[in-house]
Length: 203
Image (cartoon, rainbow, N blue to C red):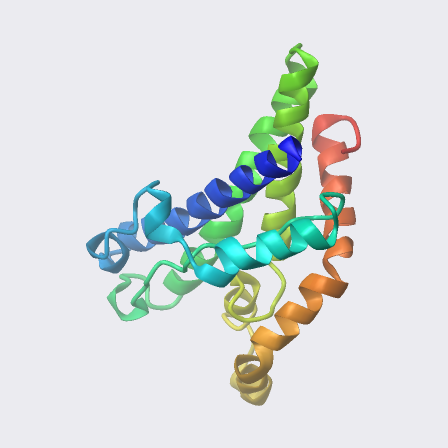
């Protein structure tokens, strides 16, 4: 149970960093919306979303008895794409920033495990941080709204796919919940593969 609690802590602060990354890139590109809303902060209270931050992680924790992947998200930072200096690619850059922050965290702690001689307890804790950040980075690249992969995909797709976009916007949340409960293991396998490449061992 102690490991599960640590995973929940890692989850929450990693998704907070994910959202701050979105807001920070938006600010760099000229949109002050997230900063003005007080969302560019590590204060967890500012980022709590009832279902994604509390109910879903606890539900997955108890459903899997601490053995399966635990997932969740923070409240999205507000972004106004019309304030971005880069009108063509600004929204894409903002969308990429979130998953990129998770991959950077995963790479940092994974490489520490691989190249730094440390006590087993630190190796175990760093493994959790790296593995779960790989999970959240990969998961957020799935093209289902409101995930970042949706915004990334439709930054490239032509207008003739507008009906697909509208369908996903209408039913995306239900598709997402279905995927979390029935497809998250695929994301876990992909994360374990990346973790093994970076850290030199499986999770």
